[in-house]
Amino acid sequence: MINVCEMIKRVAPTKTTIMITGESGTGKELIARAVHRNGGRNDKPFVSLNCAALPDSLLESELFGHRKGAFTGALADRAGWFEVCGASGAVFLDEIGEMAKTLQAKLLRVLQERTFRKVGGVQDVSTDVRIIASTNRNLRSEVEEGRFREDLFYRLNVMNLD
Image (cartoon, rainbow, N blue to C red; front, side, top):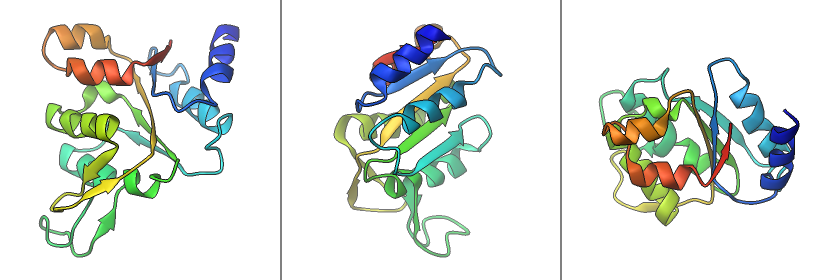
């Protein structure tokens, strides 16, 4: 734990994307919140989403937002968390290993280009959100077995806290 606390102190002030790994129930979200609280973005929004708990279509809308009429039930335009936190906030993606590959590709664009497109949208939206992800899976094995994108793995795993 002392090593983890030292890593938090070092990485919190940066904009580095972080991957937190560990067994279920070991406090990965607490680590993510500590990183946010100790960083320069602590006065900005922090949002935690459990990728395993939401269906893919709902997770996509939660992250990216949607335009009115984009799907049944989209009665109004809605900002997603990348837009809400876009001015230097943080999004914590818990259990990222459960994310569908189609959403992985969209998340990769956020990390590489710092832009995204709302569901049903035609314009790119800029973001400066910090992404902190966690998993209890061995993502290297998931990459080897074709269940997780290799390019996304390396973009997320810039700094690993285990």
